[in-house]
Image 1 (cartoon, one colour):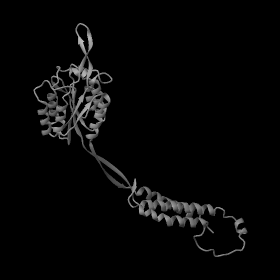
Image 2: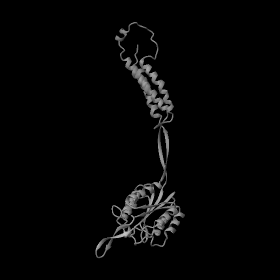
Image 3: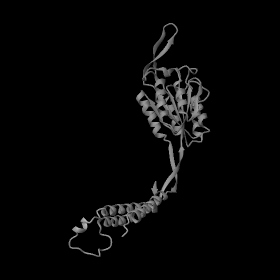
Image 4: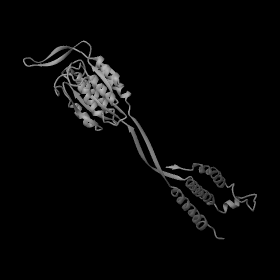
Amino acid sequence: MRFADPAFFLLLIPVFFATLLYWLGKCGRDPTLKFSDVSLVRQAGGRGRGFRRFARGLIRLAAITLAVMALARPQTGTGEEKKTQWAVDIVIALDVSGSMATLDFQPDNRLVAAKMEAKRFIEGRQDDRIGLVIFAGQSFTQCPLTFDHTAILTLLDKIQLGMVQDGTAIGLGLGNAVNRLKDSEARSKIVILLTDGINNTGEIDPITAADLAKQYGIRVYTIGVGKEGIAYLPVNDPRFGTRLIKVETQIDEKMLNDISAKTGGHYFRARDERMLHDIFRQIDLLEKTEVTVEQQVHYEERYFWFLWPAFLLVLAEMVLFELMYVKIP
């Protein structure tokens, strides 16, 4: 509730002092008879007059206060909130080639670490549409753009190695992500492409896919995943079962950097899980969703909430002190 004309509350200042003078007996007619000794008058009675004076003043003060509050125009508001937002449309393109099983990231391998950080990123983008593309030797859409983050997180959990023919078709993965975003009307459209290798297959060249992204106003953030030097990769041996082999990380950083530079994005290198976590945080800060909230409030006059009680108090004073407590000579 609010008061549309709060200046009327200033009227309560003289009312308060007038009531105080009334209670102290300083306000009223001068006595017509003067006595040098009033002890006999006190013994004669009239002890209830002080209480009646106080009660009458209190009732008048309450009535005037309520009347002033009515003059101040109390109002209650019923509002509606209009939320205007410029969400970001995001597609995460995730490499699921065999090399993503390399054991140089915690808690398991590169793919598990990438999924974990992608999950945290998605959970923090509640106002955005997010899609998911995976690629290895081929590429397909794991989840189209959606506001249903529960669904995309479920589909993210289901991603595993071996879902796609092995290889590293970075151009296909990026082209598929661009295809998902090209018709978007979002103010900001981005692709987060994560890979640990070199483009070695696919019908689309990565730079050609980057040109398409630029044409549609899509920024591409590329992430190269993997430690420098030698790491261990588990492989299945038909005779000896799973065994570890030494592999050397090979990432075409120049190509990934060219893709990002061409589209207005950035290239990042993640050599461990901490760096990967920080990279997703940086992208989150770079691509903030703009939300504007406009609140419209309609006010209704509620002066009668105070005017009627004031009227009833005045009526009560008249009944009590003009009828019930009146003394007939």
